[in-house]
Amino acid sequence: MGEPLVDDAARLAAFDAFAADVRAELASTKARMDELAAAGKVKTATYRQLFAARITLKEIDARLAERGL
Image (cartoon, rainbow, N blue to C red; front, side, top):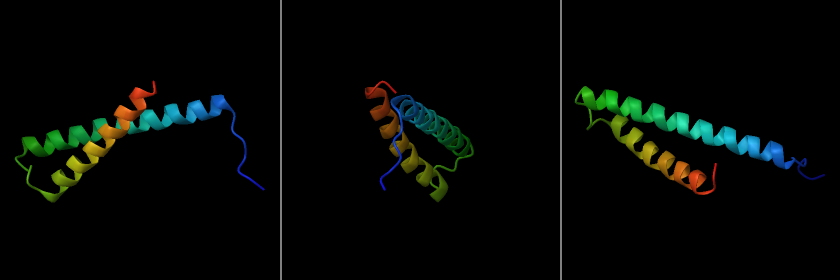
């Protein structure tokens, strides 16, 4: 029929898990960028892809933080 109902606690837990995943990926992305920068590889395609991903992850993190997550 419709989508299964999820209680508020399960929804909050899912959002908390999502927020934790975003923050872990952001930290991992930053660490990888730091490694590339230390190796002088800031002009590589990989670095630029990570840079774009970092911007997106930072925006998602900021929106989550605005909502207390």
